[in-house]
Length: 352
Ligand code: SAH
Ligand code: SF4
Image 1: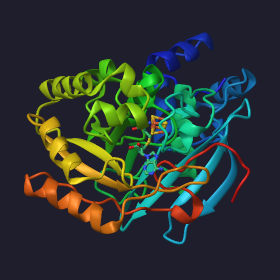
Image 2: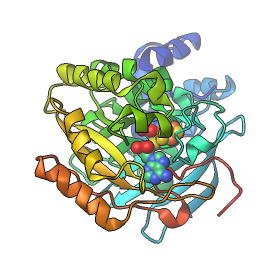
Image 3: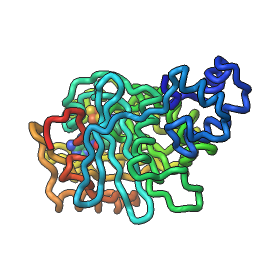
Image 4: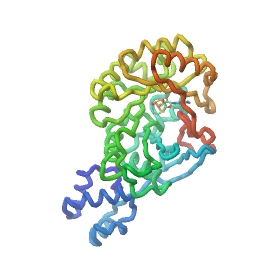
């Protein structure tokens, strides 16, 4: 059994099965999540008999297998990770000067089938377990040797998390919640909630839960200002139309406070959602919410019918939103040469 992904009470229950006292939980937690050890023999404070018992009872701390690692010319790194049942996901690290964000996946494939998304074009297979979700981050850390977890005041390369990889996190909420709670635990990996952003395609009823349970930042894949357009490019909108989505965002901010800006992601699709009328409609739609926009130039992939809006039109779109006092930066695409940019992730080993 992999101990990664167990909550503290669950870990304690396993130790109790071995006849161990509760204080061992804290020690073991420290070795797993702060030190990042995978070998029980290195956990010197545990004492030899316990180390022996852990090994003999088949406990492990294993990460997914790295099937492939690719490095972009812009230093973005992408892994293809394989879990015990051979299912795979992609995980990306996007470095900046003295920090960087790891983009975590939550599902193998995605059931939502947004028409512009490479992941969505792949068959949905299953949810990641909490263990797999956390182990994916730990494997990224292994890759950079960033153990033990650097203290808050030190430089951390893997400093931020964006839950924006493959899958819809709010369709696997319990596992993602548990995983993030483990990652945020101050005596382990200790990434603060302010450095974590969860992106959703708009599973409206689950959105307020993020503020209630986790307090992490929220990003919403809005991508259209009317139900008519959104229905066409994001099938999830037929279940949770814009009125419901916006109401859920309002609730999120009632709980989390309006200082907790929501990022509205907006993929720029040529001739689909990028007119001046769309920009004006967008402003009307988000009225009363504290939001900033993030305009994402559409990343093309083989077999997708869409084109990215011309640069001029994206700039104009941004200017119209900024005139109304909304931040609306245009996202700089990273890792395109290794298919690691937004919406390009897929499980297969086939290409590249
Ligand atoms: N499932 C979640 C999180 C993962 S997607 C969600 O949809 O929010 C991360 C972001 O990339 C989303 O905003 C998604 O809509 C966007 N995206 C998907 N395909 C894209 C593409 N081909 N080009 C640019 N952005 C894309
Ligand atoms: Fe799934 Fe997000 Fe891709 Fe839509 S954009 S198919 S919700 S991963």
